[in-house]
Length: 304
Image (tube, rainbow, N blue to C red; front, side, top):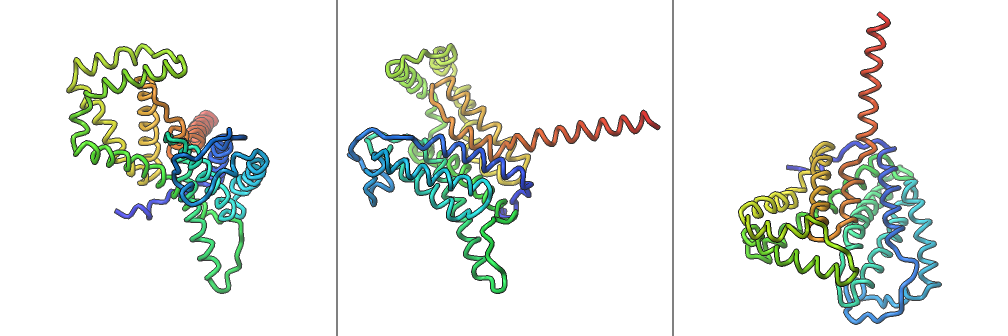
């Protein structure tokens, strides 16, 4: 099945709203300052570049200024490759800095992958336009290019889920579903950690879930099996609008359930799924359009 032929023909206004929402996510994720620390456990870009300059407030302020301009151009669709170069580098740098302290978090991972995928695609189209003789180079991205950028962001997002599913199989020797009843211990540990670190009280569901898992191991395997299947087959969201809406909505429900049961929050993944897969502005516009057509038909019948 050729998923590259399933690039959704989003309207320009849809993609502009997607880019604006993604830009807000990037802007809010890059901090205004970093405390002085050491890169004791280099990770990612820190293996090749000394990222200590990000702990200088003046330098970080300059980079945030560049980021603001880059995000503005990205939303407009102007100088897309150059704009995404700034966005991708800064996300990679900040993510590497935070993950070089001895603990790993995934805040920048999906954002960085979505930006990187769009950067690669924008670079491809920029070079292609340059090589076409007689075709002038316009820095303003065409509608087709914007659709490919949106598709690239979707591919990057679902690749995170597929990778997660494959990793589960690899780490468990193919027995992840069979071992899901052991998650009762993990849930108790996670909730205790959250309480000790931030005095965050556990929900009623989180308190009762471990006992339910121990008492009903088969139901637990079925329940988590659905979640595993959702991750593994999340690439089906690339088939079109409605598959993306259905799978994106299911992923958001899955993350919300995990946050209630285990206290593990995946807000970045939820937001990206809401932006690029669910695409709620299109759903609202579709609903308004159907209501308007229905009302117009009724008025025409009444008038006749």
